[in-house]
Length: 81
Image 1: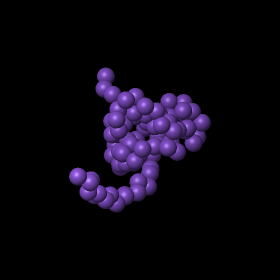
Image 2 (image 1 turned 120 degrees about the horizontal axis):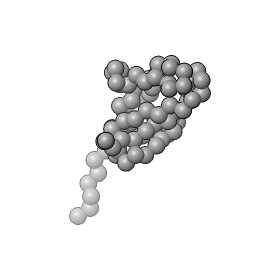
Image 3 (image 1 turned 30 degrees about the vertical axis):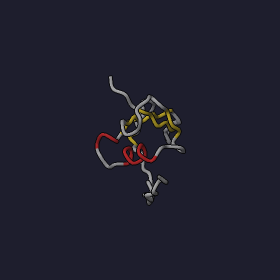
Image 4 (image 1 turned 135 degrees about the vertical axis):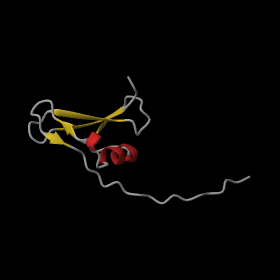
């Protein structure tokens, strides 16, 4: 069994808890609410691949997550010697 992190949300049809697992983060078995997902996890779970399609165990509705993952500019700062 591998390590992973989980993003939790609710099925829009039956309200059951949906947990989507990803290996994109630190993989410390952390759990995140859908409204506070680290960018790396959101980007991984938003990829349009077959492995990102899940099925609710309660009502069998198929779903996948979408995220607008913003790109941020980084700046290199010289450290004082």
